[in-house]
Image (cartoon, rainbow, N blue to C red):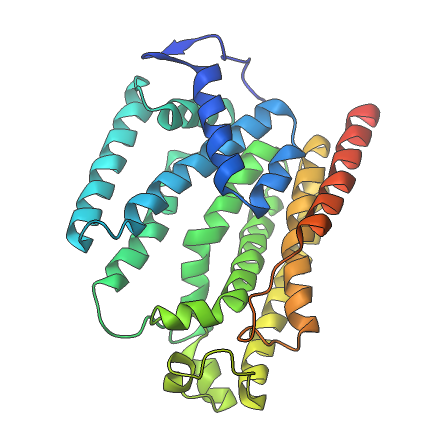
Length: 313
């Protein structure tokens, strides 16, 4: 996919694009955690665009999660924010550095605006559920897949526009890579989600493995998983492993200079799943994570791959 010529010297409203992208990079550096290690392994223009998209997502998440406001107020603030973004995307004027940077990124990398609407729709799903006192659950894996698509796969579909690709098969593979990442997050966060009255594990899987919903919502803190709970978590882990195969198939379909960044991201997330597996799916005693030194080691390999890609490209 062709990139437009750099526009960084242009001023949008009271901001230059350099200033707008710098603000987005600062947000990503402060908040992105696993994602930021992959951002570093991208060439500058692509790194700027990814940071802008991340900052856009962060703004939406913060509006949705701000417990200083009622649910109705949060929905209203999010609607006003989305309306403001749509105005900027059409007219190109704003003093919000995130909006300025994202508009430039969508133009430069031909990102469909509908994908950004879907990103926000994923945030809105959680707000709709939060209005109910009933546990947050999904009946089937297909239902859960739809949620994962909105909160993770859409991110992948945006990212591959920035990474660059020509084979349309990359789009389905990017969708499934997002599913792999989100299923990994769900496994890692089972205990924390239960404390928030949320169980993302499909109810059909709970029934198949003989695990009662109430037993997950009200289990003793830090208690090791039962045999049935392990089998339940293993089932989701197997599904995640299948989708990581899509991540490997995606790698050669994106532009050579972007592959190291995708490799870093996959290595960190798949490494997190492997840690959960090695802990025999005990996600209750302690929260699984990839140690900082391991992440830095993965990043070092990614940067070396980026240097090699530039050398041979």
